[in-house]
Length: 115
Image (tube, rainbow, N blue to C red; front, side, top):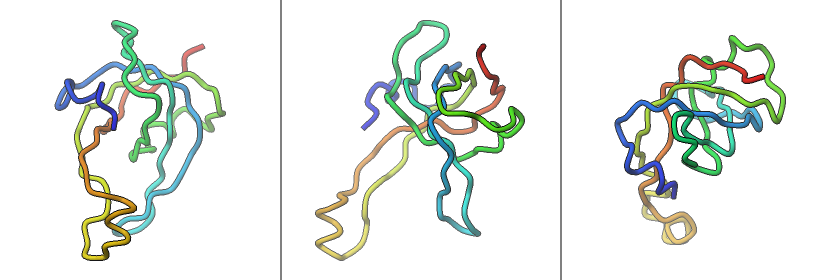
């Protein structure tokens, strides 16, 4: 769980992170492009926020062109909580992936590459 993000739920933060890779998230109506960034910190204080986070709205990053692993990025995003884990009746799946709450960054904007 990303406990350092908990105290910022609902707040918009100015973040700095290192791009790691692109990905795809399955969903309705179809797959969504994602990006994963690592070493996420607050720009204003340097406070570490999380070791990594998947950002489901990759279109905000497309304006920069193709990103390479290790590119350092600045962006603004809102901290939100979400439910994770399996929520069905299959006991094996439930034990393997129990439900819980986690925190992530949503609605990234003002994305720029740091030189």
